Length: 241
Image (cartoon, rainbow, N blue to C red):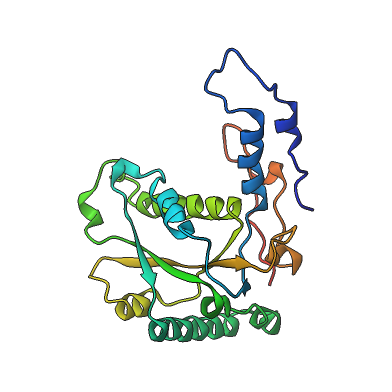
């Protein structure tokens, strides 16, 4: 089931807390949590452009994401060439077929998950990690993958801002990174991590699409929140195929 809205914890908070002057007013807090709980991976879009200046606002929100060591590892490519969009769709469709071939079950169900949003959406973005990231070691000496975490935070910023603006976002991850990098003339060391489809959404479902289709459920808190040490009986998230 979808989380209750507003979440009870938010409803229980006082509207004014003199000991915490940095706390937002209650309606603003509720709006932030609403965007978090109602964010969806949108697959189908209505025709038409985004509202004026919406893309600029969403990109500014992405660029305000937390950046490890302030390295700002994300790079966004705005795809405006229709021919290039068609080539990207072909790459994505090829990987969708390859993924289906490697599923031990539910192959036909998986193939029903269309990627036509890549051709229908108003705006198309590719998010990549920059080249030359190795020289940025602040916060990454033992955890070099933090550049990926940082870029993912930028994507989430854009996604939540888009939901607040009523703009649908679909995150496409079916692609061969090397093939897409070559198609987009990326330099050695740069790596695409996401294709983002943006447009006017047909709807924002109450539940995430994959949850609706039985591909998984949100884990209960006792399965992902541990105290002090990793419990001996903890289990990985089971696959739905």
